[in-house]
Amino acid sequence: MTLLRASRMFPDFSSSLTDFFNESHDWGNGWTTKLPAANIAESDKAINIELAAPGLDKEDFDLSVDNQILSISCDKEEKSEIKEEQYTRKEFSYRSFSRSFRLPNIINTEKIKASYQDGVLKIELPKKDTAIKAPKKQISVG
Figure 1 (cartoon, rainbow, N blue to C red):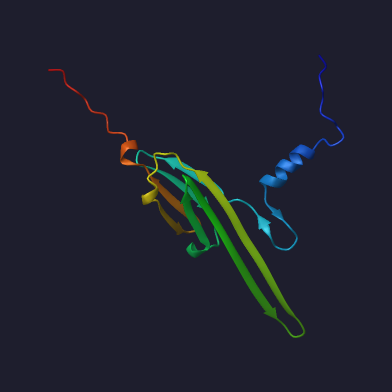
Figure 2 (figure 1 turned 120 degrees about the vertical axis):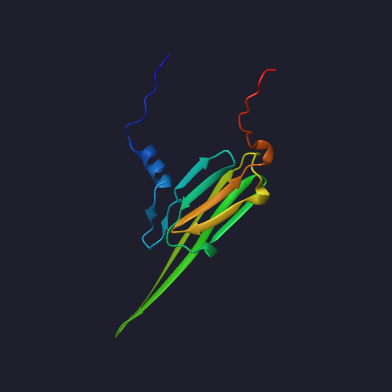
């Protein structure tokens, strides 16, 4: 049996691709792509998701649930115009992202709540009543 070794011709090619798809990149025109960081926590009654998305308004978000998949997206266009003596400069920037989460069957999709405050989108995914664990009960022997 012969061991094959990775080619040294492109030593960082694989890691460069990984970095390209996982990090933010400025495309030279003010477009930066980056998925917002997500914190996911589970309690007895719900699963909570928090997304860091500063600089947006609650109207910028689009949330939907279809076939146990929670989709969160945002499209925001910003325009600015500066007029000075001999020229006018207009700048446009676009920010968008889309994230999806597969929800477990224990989530009551009819009671999902979302709020946006201080740059954090908070999504509460309540569990179905059948999924909530009953508290431990001590049984006496008679």
